[in-house]
Amino acid sequence: MTITQAILSGLRATWRNKWMVLIFFGCNLLMAAAIAAPMHTAIADHVGNSMVGEKLARGFDWSWLVEFQIAYAAFLKSFSTAIVWGSVLFLALNTVLSAGAFEVFRASLSRDAAVPHHGAAGLNNDAEVPARYPGLHAFGHGIGKYFLRFARIAIIASVLYFVAFGFWQHLMGMGVAKLFEDASVERWHFYTEWLRWALLALTVFVVNMIVEYAKADMVIDEHKSAFGALGHAAGFVFAHFGRVLAIYLALGSLTLLTIFIYSAFARFFPQSSVLTVAIWFLVAQALLWMRWLFRLSSWGAAVSYYSGQRAAVAMPQSAPAEQVEAQA
Image (cartoon, rainbow, N blue to C red; front, top):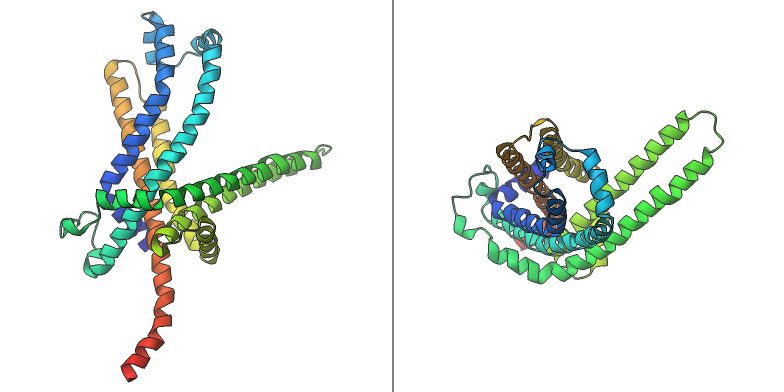
């Protein structure tokens, strides 16, 4: 399977199951709203019916922020703790939902393999035999079957991220600072710092890819061991590193594009009335929906590429047995 085929397969599978994107988007939006509700209440109490509210609707006011921080110092300290716990809840939520998503992608891939002519179709050809496509039943089945296995992978991945940041950001950061503390030319220090950050980013990318392919390994090969799945995934990622990285970066760049558009829109679109604020909010939510579309497409591409490469390896091994049966 080529890079383009894997990317298109992931996009096609996700587009065919757009309801999954809606589930991820809706669940994360509701949780974010619940976490942000105390902050909304605090700001509303502080602003009240004053003219500050109208001023903030037209643009951010740094003087108001300083005043708010002083008046609500204790609340902001507790709210920062709530954000930390909220990030843990987001991790748990998306781990649960990803178990269902990977099962849907696996079932979709199996269904396309059973109907080869349909696998080459476009994004919107799911009307041919819609009753045979996996749906909420497969999504719920995947959550029930793989959630605990995916949770173990998420815990191990969190440790790997901690080690990566501790090594590149803390240990290597102190080492680079020590190395150039008496240097008279800052150019090499500057380049070394950029190299350190680039290696940190690459390490995070590699961990992300291994985690995605470990989940694909679990649903395709029915592995119950998180370490076993991570080991198989690591071997696969490093054996096909160029293509795996290209698939990951291609779909990741689409996610970054939505973030860039969101930032540009938020920067240059005027928010001077209730209508313009409402338009800005709707556009922001549409871009967040697209972000989840590309995120799930990355998972679908991982399942497609992993199963495609394994099938390509298994096919030559089964050929001699078929030849013996034919001769017999």
